[in-house]
Image 1: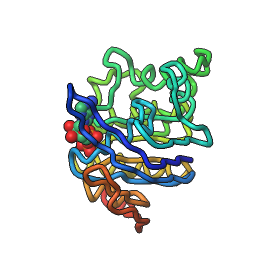
Image 2: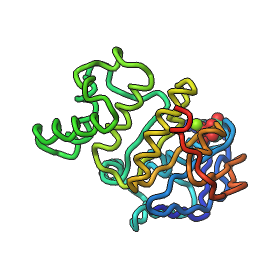
Image 3: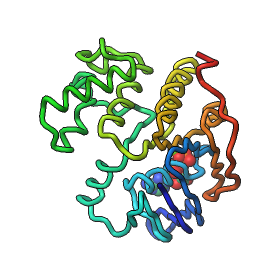
Length: 233
Ligand code: ADP
Ligand code: MG
């Protein structure tokens, strides 16, 4: 599903340059649930942003679902993002003045689906994350865990090939974090490929494989025995 070869990325700041990713090699197969773990500043978000076509690599090769991701203009990158990827962020990134249902249906609008289909699908995914009764509520009326569920429903609504989550539990308490991981595990059980960036060991162990990033290189990449979040919630 994902192939990365000799990936390098630097940030230029004036005459200085910060070498953040220093030769990353990593593949992800369909159906995997991979944690990208490492301490703050290790390059996790930089890597995920490149995988998510939100940023460009300097050197190396990236292939997503058989498509070489190279020299994309913003329009093309946006098209691929809509077609292939769903995003989940630490800060939820919901639109404050839109209801839960409208937030979830937004990606379907960008996919040019008709209104009726948008609302039906959005409701179906809200139900999947257990928030059908909250469809008309604004984000400000939801708890942190509920907001992240809405964001997960929104990411799923576009039926992406890969879900990419950057510290999805970073703003949540432990119990709520495990509830969100329980949901993510359930989605992966159905076959969805998921990448989870985290600096938390317990969250990483709820994935099926841990890729450990340190100072811009992969220092360890191992398949693990998955801890089920449901044993905590
Ligand atoms: P992580 O997500 O693991 O905390 P990041 O990928 O966000 O790490 O950051 C890696 C390094 O790159 C850090 O030293 C950070 O300060 C730097 N960095 C991240 N984004 C930028 C940017 N847009 N411009 C300059 N430096 C950046
Ligand atoms: Mg980060």
